Image 1 (tube, helix red, strand yellow):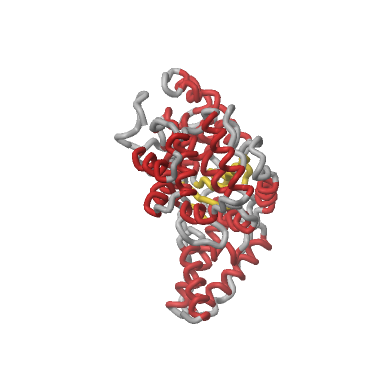
Image 2 (tube, one colour):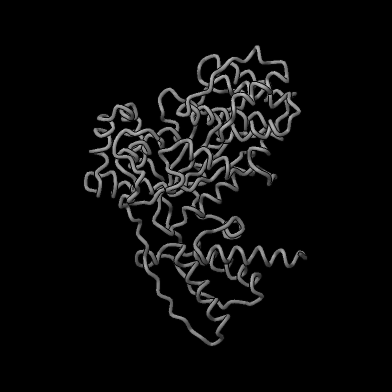
Amino acid sequence: MTPGADEKLAARLAVEALRNGVPNREAVRELGCNQARAEDNFIGLLDGVADSRSREAGSRGMLVSGDFGSGKSHLLVHLEHLALSRGFVCSKVAISKETPLYDLGKVFSSAMENGRIPDRRGRFIEEIALSLKPESEEYAAFSQWADGAATDGLLNMIFPASRIVHERSGDLELNSEIESFWAGDRMLISRLRNGLRQVDQLQYYKFRAPKPADLPVQRLRFAIELIKSAGYRGWVVFLDEVELIGSYSILQRGRSYAEIARWMGLAQGESYPGLVVVGAVTEDFASAIISPDGQKKDGDYVRPRLEQSAKYGVLSARAESGMRLLERDCLTLEPPSDETVKTAVETLRSLYNRAYDWQPPSYDATAGGAGFQGRMRYKVRAAINEWDLRRLHPGYRPDTEFEDFTTPYEENADPERETSDEPV
């Protein structure tokens, strides 16, 4: 493609993303972000990340809230730009039925699958592995940490064993299997032991297969240190659509609240230095789901329900911490000002012109409006919709109607939904 064609395609993709309400990176780069308070808080989290040699501080996190269409996803993409430019690797995880927040293993696997690295485009775990420099101070500190963590029982010995094989083996297929194991896949113990034998290290690494339930936490710890050993400042994980907790069963909601406490650095006895987490949730979630006046009154019922469970009773205090975070510590997105709206619409006009070689007319947009009409998504989509119609049908003057979207919090009719303490 010619440079002009490349620019036109990028502009068109940005407009298409905005039309569908899912801003891509190009759209966010063009439009910028008007959430100065959230941006400042986030930069403070990045600046406060401990030096890669220090493993005493815990993870750092923030929660942001806003109505549907108020710009939460736009903000997350903007914050991702900031983190990448400061030497962090980033992952965005959209909470869903396939990636439930209460399942750390699935959330971790999604984060590894959807990771981004500054100036690199390959598979996340492979690019991290390619960035490792065994002769560096960072890698030496990582090796020492992994051995010590295994000795202290924080890691199964399979992790330092896989590290030494990956470092010294020339078997590309085996190393690929090891990288996939680090990223959440299974691995045959016999394959790793054969690798240890090949590098003459079998006698130094004795281990049994780890329990599946222990692996997610250990993988998370190991991955953060692996990332720092590759020369990056840390790992930023964005958790989008946290409000989907509301569609889970009560035990699953309780476990999800406990996971929020973990990701935000409030899990007692757990430390993840180098991890920064940002969660996005709808503004009405706490009042609708946690409050005594809400639909499910989780503030009253979740902790007692967890305490009745032999399997999950240990999570009750942590779940309480997660609920308090959602009730009290969410940073609410700022509504757009007149100047913000006008600037965004003018920028959008220029983007639309580059995308379709057609100069859209001025569009009168100001801040405010009844209900959802005051949200930035409404104003952006209304402008694009009008320009589309006028470009395709010159002389036509559209009158656009929108309907509001409210987040449904009904529990899913899921046959796999837990009703007791069945294993997961």
